[in-house]
Length: 153
Image (cartoon, rainbow, N blue to C red; front, side, top):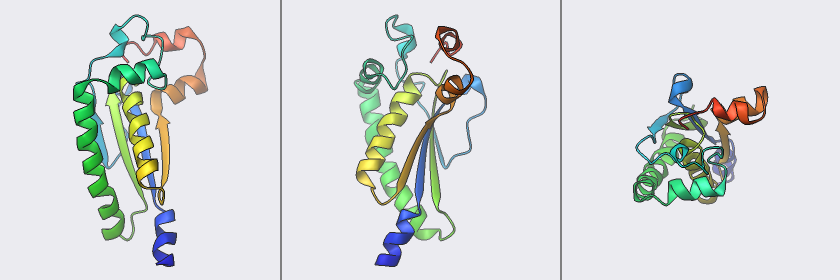
């Protein structure tokens, strides 16, 4: 059993958000499009915020569509990830990519929730979280100008 725990500790699950308008989806085991959710970009006070901010997360995650989606996604990953690691000896990482229009609001909020669920449900796996568009903004420029480029979040 120790060998199994050691092997599980080497398994990583990567959760990332991205914007479809900013390029091709990243390579991933599972890619989900969350553009079916209502877009916080169109709510004036939420526009400058991101899915990391609680008001945006609440706006996105309180939608009945988001709650149903999360239930289904949790069930899917709860089945697929352990099976992938168990049945595929050479697989040590699994990536879930979540996309919306600009990669600022919906996909970020959902990715944050998915990562939290995985960290709580699978402490034996290393869970990482990244936001392709937000990380690029942070690394390349600062201020309102860069957020304006994310129109359609």
